Length: 94
Image (cartoon, rainbow, N blue to C red; front, side, top):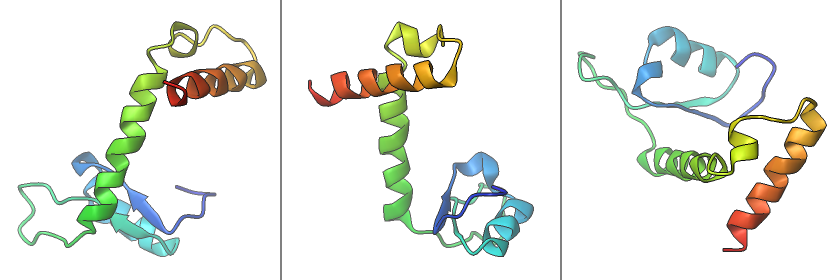
């Protein structure tokens, strides 16, 4: 999280630790992380904002269906980003 500014830090239950939540608050971000089942006092989080995370994960899974993006054939970051843009455009044009 260091070096990035955000209004919210959205993560899954695996990141539910006091250290991660404290680091997010230290940077001025809201920690949107559901509590693990073993937490004695469950934390409150924005459930609507957490559902938005699913859209990002679905889109990444759609992009990975394009072989050239999934296997990272391109050697340079510039070319790889270009193919990510092409794959994103193809998905949006469906």
